[in-house]
Length: 280
Ligand code: SAM
Image 1 (cartoon, rainbow, N blue to C red):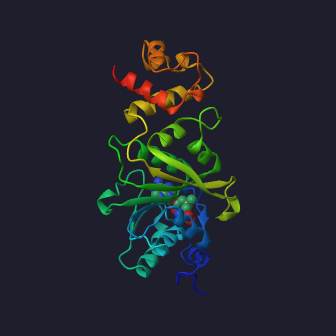
Image 2 (image 1 turned 90 degrees about the horizontal axis):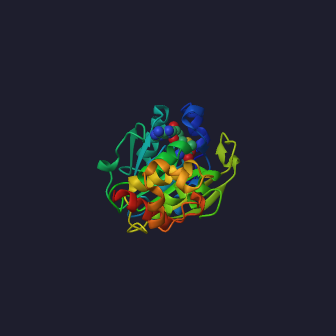
Image 3 (image 1 turned 60 degrees about the vertical axis):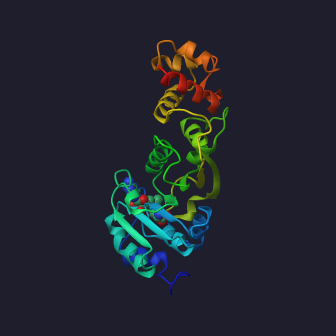
């Protein structure tokens, strides 16, 4: 029997195309089309948007994005076994799904997309984190995307939305708060996936701010914050020793006590420190 969108149910797609999940590609599939439509709705009104989807796999989220009205979906998938299943979806939604076989860390999708662009993905978490940091740290702002709707391990999602003083606060929270508004949109138990992963997951939705909350060079901010949290238990004058020879003066000039630890420092102060260090 056909599923709600007229295509075969995802379990059948997986059997027909021999898509046994591969651990090496972080494959934990979403097979419930009601759930994938719900995730697609978190991405906002898709009707006038192109959507970049990374890691479509057998196409559960892809189908959600298309049935929720995305103007066009550009999907990048590393596993060639998934291409025939994705071709069936493309045939069902003529002219609205383009698939690129490749590694999302290497493919530049922008030539194929027309703004406004939203991003949606259920990716292995390490690839997702690396892409998130890239999408947040382009030299120029605003970025190519209006929003990012991304699945992460629950623990990573908490690091994205964390505030100063909490254990989860660090590089991800600072980069996200700097240029975006981020919130956890949906929490998912392991059983929502096939096969179930070991831990819970969450969908995080980020909206790009028109301008960063405070000026800073993205690369310098990223480097300073990474260094500060690399030794998060140390006082900043020790953790940032290599950042500049006169780091204590620079910390003071940025409104930071050299004896403070990274997890107590807010975004505004980190941006001030990044500007001070960038000024030479
Ligand atoms: N989106 C599908 C879903 O929700 O059922 C699949 C999710 S599964 C967690 C992750 C998908 O990302 C897999 O299909 C995997 O092959 C693909 N993938 C893993 N690494 C990738 C990469 N570097 N670039 C593109 N796709 C990748």
